[in-house]
Length: 189
Image 1 (tube, rainbow, N blue to C red):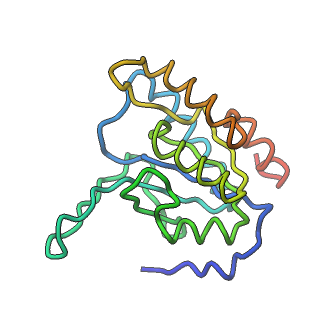
Image 2 (spheres, rainbow, N blue to C red):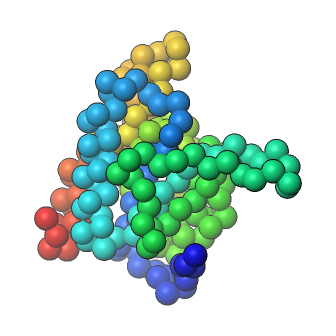
């Protein structure tokens, strides 16, 4: 297991971190709405890796029942398996900042990140609120994110509402706009 030395990357604020949440096996939002979202996540991941940007994967795990039982980790979705140089953070609460190592990584990067994934109504939203309170700057990539149908509000309407709320805390943009603004300026297509 390799260890990332955050001090070596301190104050690389012009280099955002791509944070992908919920790209693991779990009850998923409506499969019909996921195809485009997952394609956008794949494109983001490929672009970030081509530009040598740091990538962080965040997954929700159930709290351990006891110290004697092994922790259960959900499998990653096909095509979204982290590589050795990617960061992986496990959270038991909604916000990515509930993981101490994630909070440290964001401090060392001046809180400059883009977030996307399948848990927009919980993990993305809670992380965006925490980021705002820490004076971190982030972009929520709306077209690379999805909400679950909560049974009352259709997923598409729920997602639009979450995107509107996110705009109160950070930037909301399409993944192609984010890629152009940060990837093409580095000479990466």
